[in-house]
Length: 361
Ligand code: ATP
Image 1 (tube, protein in one colour):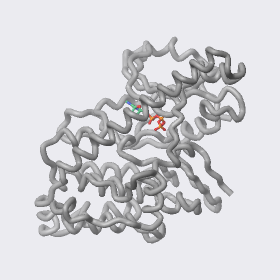
Image 2 (cartoon, rainbow, N blue to C red):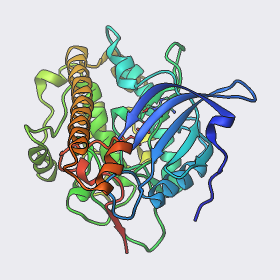
Image 3 (tube, protein in one colour):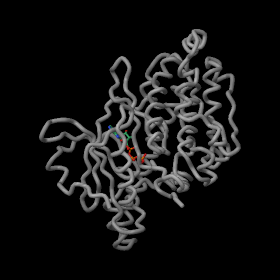
Image 4 (cartoon, helix red, strand yellow):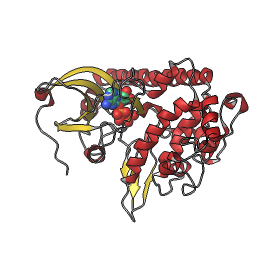
């Protein structure tokens, strides 16, 4: 069992504003009292009892910590320290101030493919590094791709949220049903043995959206989205892809490949001519093509709206739950849980399976 520091985090860090929240807690700005340095503190609620619906299993947090401890790369969020109390674990991590990459791009008037590639290249470098250590992220999506700072000539990408990450062990199969419908690979839906290639599928989806403002497999419902993924039902609709180079489409196609062994690896991607042009003509084509800003902005606005809708409905559910608690309609155990936890009870098919509904055999 991993040992985390038992000191009271507040003795060493001053806790500041909320920067964001996830399924299992909040991320807050924190100031190290000794040096004045600013960090981010990820506060993760632990399960109070075995099998409780609220909070995270300690084992799951240990896995996230162990993975973060083994990753030191410019494009991966760094971990500094870990504290534990009875009810929560606090991860002190690098403070990432630049917000989400997609929000940064959506603020622009236009963006050439070559500029989008500069960001993509950094994502690929981070992922390539992770994969070289046999670690798969398994939750690559726009929300987990941030910028260290916003106002820099070429901002640094940081990949965050290793809550679903997994380290592969040679000879041991790994299956998982976790992820976010729009971005998950067909082998996840089919509960097949997984590899780091699942991340490459997600990068294919992210690139598709980045260039067109359209989500390739998005259906009316999550069930429909999952069906579309398994059926490989996607096209490059001319209306959305009129400004896209053929090299970019080739890049996406080689990632949205059903057979995970046929899919490009991060290493392959980094030498694909769209990312690393070999000729002047290839270079010129990237500079002539641009991303579909009108539809990208629309996609991003909808995405943000959905995120805040999910947050508000989670709060409403919590509020209702607390009312039930106050009227004494639930037993004492539930009362303790609902007073101390804010787990999002989102009903999305795959989100329900978030975190560690996985198996190694
Ligand atoms: P999820 O429910 O998606 O698994 P989580 O509980 O694992 O989320 P994160 O995704 O790691 O939490 O973080 C939640 C949010 O907090 C992020 O979307 C981001 O806005 C913000 N955040 C996370 N890490 C940092 C950081 N290092 N610096 C600044 N903000 C951060």
